[in-house]
Length: 119
Image 1 (cartoon, helix red, strand yellow):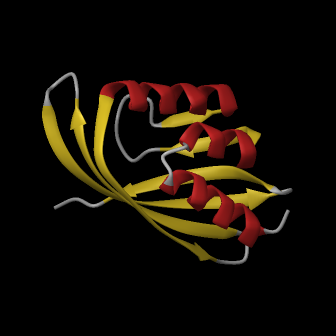
Image 2 (tube, helix red, strand yellow):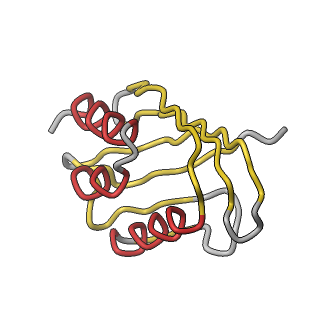
C-alpha cells in the first residue's frame, strides 16, 4: 500500500475518533511507539500500543479533537493533533498540541513518535 493511502486513511479514521480502527488497519504487528515523557516511553508491538491507546481513552474525556494533515514525505508522514481533554484521575482539563511522525515500511506503519508542544 502506498504511503499516501496509508496516511490519508489513518488521518480520516483519527478525525472520527476511531483510533483503534486506525491501528488495526494501518499498523504493523511490530510497531514501535515512542512518547517523549512518562514511565512507559516506548511501546513495542501492536498489543502494547493498543493497550496504551486503551489506557488513554479510559483516562481522558475528549471535548474537542482536531487532526491536521497528513504531511507526506518519502517514507514518513506527519500529523498534528490538537485535543481539548479532561484527564479523569486528576479532574484536570488540558489542551494537548502534538505532532506525530509515522514511518512506513512494507505497507504498514512500523514506527510512530510523538512530539508535544511545551509552553
